[in-house]
Length: 269
Image (cartoon, rainbow, N blue to C red; front, side, top):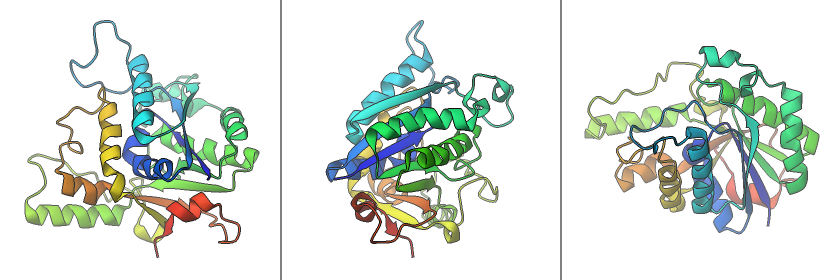
């Protein structure tokens, strides 16, 4: 059996982007490890969810462990950086935030964990961080460098399939399935996801969408029961969230690829 280390910017990122992949990996006997760069200090909590005096960072840290339990992850680690906030906010300039961290130094922190785990696969994000968040972009940079330092055989970049989303939203709109007042993301924004032509692999996680939804629910400070994704009917959730997309560059040869990579990651074409 193999090992996957999944590197994320904030608590709940693992749920939305890769929980299906990780739950499937764990169910098939592979070791799964979660690493978070920050504790999501600048997230916006669901109104009323925090107790008096409860710190958001502490709550979100606890939610990571609950999510890991649902997914089947064996270990959770935090690199100790502070949430940078959305791109262009003053918080990006804080000297202690993840966006301001020196890539080499942060990569060495992550490489310590990679050296201990000796993973076959490291998951990061694409070079736009999925949607342009500075901490997500930094995950890409730091993760790629850490993989070099620790000689990880395969790095997979989680991404959003822009064309898949267009097809899905078009179909839902025709069927009247989009909620009233819902604002779709700007799919013309070059920083949002990637065109399907640039995506190399997918993971079929339809059989694990219950774990994915439960992982998302574990992050209750960020996603209440009425959150759009959590409120989706089961068939819609399975269709929209049951396939996860990745860019693998370089793609390992079949002879050199670890079994866990071959087991999970199917070529898109």
